[in-house]
Image 1 (cartoon, helix red, strand yellow):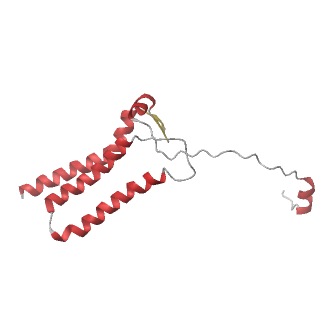
Image 2 (cartoon, rainbow, N blue to C red):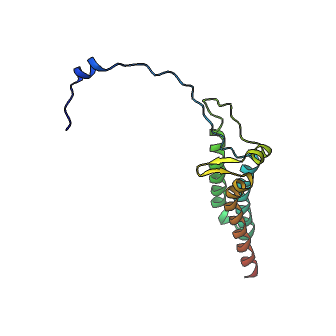
Image 3 (cartoon, helix red, strand yellow):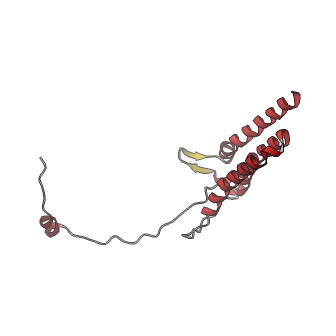
Length: 140
């Protein structure tokens, strides 16, 4: 059974101790080399460039500009976030460091090749989809 305990009882029995100050270590680098990050952005913007070249007309200028802005913001804001306070000593891995160490993910350690494949699979598939759309549009 549970009992109601008064605040006075707790105050006379409790011993309050200040917790030690532990420095906070912040790693916001995503551990992905800059080249892989840039290749991801290039894949998405390349798709937009293909669609603009294929279906380019004056009516698509504003939607394409909005798409470019959203993609640029979607990748620029996290890139800026990695450099915000508190200042961290960590830096993104170089390609060589990534090849030597791999990357620790939520599901475990991943080799550089597997991590790069996981990051670039969607942009590459979208580029291939854009190429297929361009081919279909050219034959019609």
